[in-house]
Image (cartoon, rainbow, N blue to C red; front, side, top):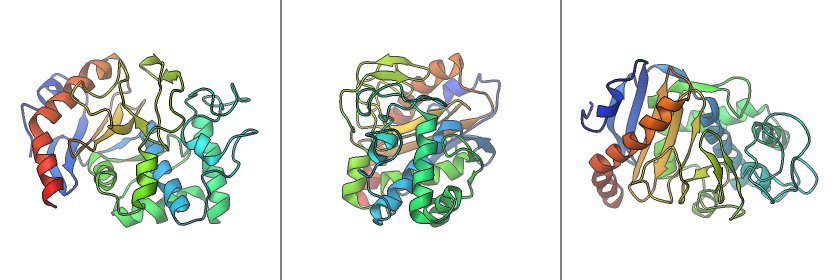
Length: 280
């Protein structure tokens, strides 16, 4: 199943990709190699964030419990607001002052969650998210960038985030709303943003420019992209999620291809997504 018009700007790519467009009810459209396993890179953070939120929802972890540098909490780590640097070293700022995108922060968070749930973090991700959703993704290595799987697999997470079953409504709403509003910071690959908005593990589009989603994307769109040339966005207003994985690392090609691809998908399928959600 593939829509030539929605994916027309992918025809000239010289590397393999897999794309899956979903509504809350199931797959709407696919392109390329949706069953091929690719690395997720930082899209892994969506898996780790969801597993952390499940632990919070079950009362095993408290959002405001200390974690990370002095004054930081689980909430700060999820929102990239702890001040920890990208991958190593001491904090670059006080918690809650800047949006410092941090693999180290997610790895520190995973250690805190593993301690609270009493098992290895990868085991917790498998138990709390991967198995319940019927995914076959694997997390090996860093909880910030170590997962791999197919676009079909990633799309299962996208559909969960359109119509959550693993999290309570209030926590999910908080997770997908801006946490510590107004913090400046750098969105990797897209430069400094005066309001580098983030939820609890989910990057939130709002009015960022430039951005990896499209002009048609709702400001409430959330998700993540990865340096492996991967993304998952969820547009709750359109009722759609799109998983994109590929064999070429993120680069100029992605900044040129992803936004118009997103706009084409929304133009073609948004009505389907809205109808699907309202009728379900």
